[in-house]
Structure formats: structure tokens, C-alpha cells
Image 1 (tube, rainbow, N blue to C red):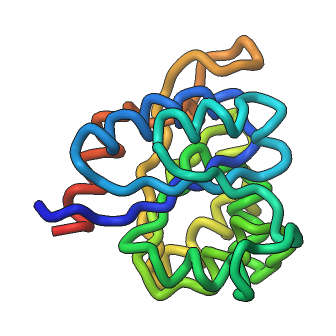
Image 2 (tube, helix red, strand yellow):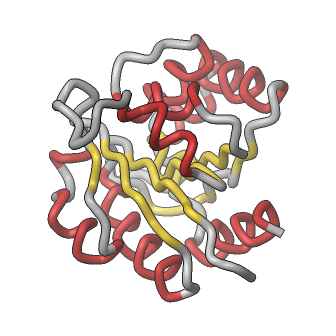
Length: 179
């Protein structure tokens, strides 16, 4: 498979640390990885870690002056063969389903014509909530793909549906989309 550019979006979840392994594995497969973090994601992992693993700049701020005169979210969207959001919180899923583009990640996704893959991770009650399920349904209707969370140990101490899917399963879905 020829090298593809994959934007990995990271939202503010305890599962954000798994994005580091995802980026590393995708890089080892020969892909060009560009990371876009939400501000909340920075509470869990650092841009430096992602830059080291991806060997690319990690993007965080929509309003930082770009190196060239272009809109960062649009230029990132044009580069992407695929956008993967892992982990995706109920918040980011809801903002995307509502068309709210108030940060670099949501603006990049909505500006893109590339496939979008979302891997949710959250508390089981949040995941099963009618609003979250409605938002996921709306995104599926417009063609977004999902790798559903699994039953597992959650950060809140409970066991339930909401644990980020196995990275092998996420990568398998990425490979399927890129073929």
C-alpha cells in the first residue's frame, strides 16, 4: 500500500495516551501521520510526544499564525487521505453532529472530503445515552465510519461499554478504508 496521509485527531479522554501507540503503529506501516489535538487532549498527553512519534508538527491552535498564508484547517483537510479521531469523546461527536466548528479538529473534519473514522471512548452511561447514540446515528447517515468501543475497564472504575476499541481493530478498519 502506498504511503497515505492520515490525520489523527485526539480528543480529551484518558484514552488519549493510546493515540501515541496508534500513531507509532501507523508510522511503522509507512503512513504520513499528522496529529491534531483538542485543548482537552493536552491535559492527558503532550504535543511533543506526538511530534516525536509522527515526525511531524502536531497542530493544536486554529488561530495561531500559519507559516504560509493559508487557513490551517483547510490545508490540513486537503492533505488528508483519512481522518481518524481516536479517542473521540461524547463532546466531539456531538459538536461534529451539530456542525459546530469551534476548534481546529472539528474545523478540519468539516472542511475535509476524505473519509472520517471515529473511535469513541467514554463512560458507558455517556456512550449509551440517547443523545450520544443519536449523534453517532447522524454521523453514520452522512458516511462517517465508527469502530465501536468495547466492554472493558473504564477510568471511572466501572466495567462497561465505552472502553476504546483494540488498536488492532482500529488499524484493521483504517486499512480497509484506505484500500
